[in-house]
Length: 341
Image 1 (cartoon, rainbow, N blue to C red):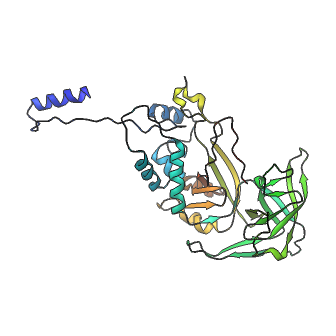
Image 2 (image 1 turned 90 degrees about the vertical axis):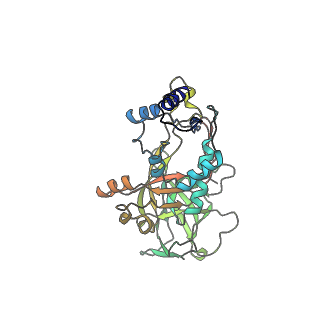
Image 3 (image 1 turned 90 degrees about the horizontal axis):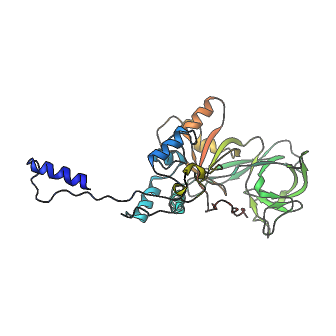
């Protein structure tokens, strides 16, 4: 820049620089990305206005925010390798590329794959007569996950997204009169739907096939994840979306008008008991990286140490931040995301 050249010339005139060629500064464009802002002034406005939970909010494009969200360091290095550097000030990187790098890194660095129900829907297995629960053992796998024990009984939970009373074309999960295969468990059939006074489904009454354990699902019967109603572990899942609903919020007269009001969804979920062994309270006090786990079909999640410690101290559940979804599912405002099949 002209200011740097002026400074270097003055220093050289004082005899402090012995070199003939003066140092020269090369300025490169900052890493602009869609659906976020990187201006410190704008980020400060988000923090001061309470639109985000501080500088380390998992939606913020800061190192502390990305670390809290669970982004592996290797994913950021890979992103930088792919995009390189440029002097073009208008160059913009697609947010999809960052998510793809994070997703690839999570696949390599995540060993634990657990069952978790984000939106629990009560299921009563009407023909399960035993008063005691049955334990379904899932053998240890080659990726390092230990032997898991899944309690099965009369009261279970399914994800609301896995049931439709009147199925849409192409829907392959559980329907009224239809069947589904519980992951690692039995095949169940939905016989009755119970609704509240507002017409919302609150319970499914199903029957199970005692001979279906350990067998592959029948043709056209899809597997679904599930949890025991009482023996599963309650957790709090924070699902993060893009902070801005428009690709270039800075092009607006006020970039705050492009804020995504649905960038955070907090769900009281239920997870299989193994989660306490992998991400239990014993891990909250150390300085190791937050463990990454994959909740099957739900995404990759990282334990939020700070929020979990506060929650556990007050008798609450562990808190997990969704790092990234299993597959790219984000759609611009006005377009619906594809339903999980």
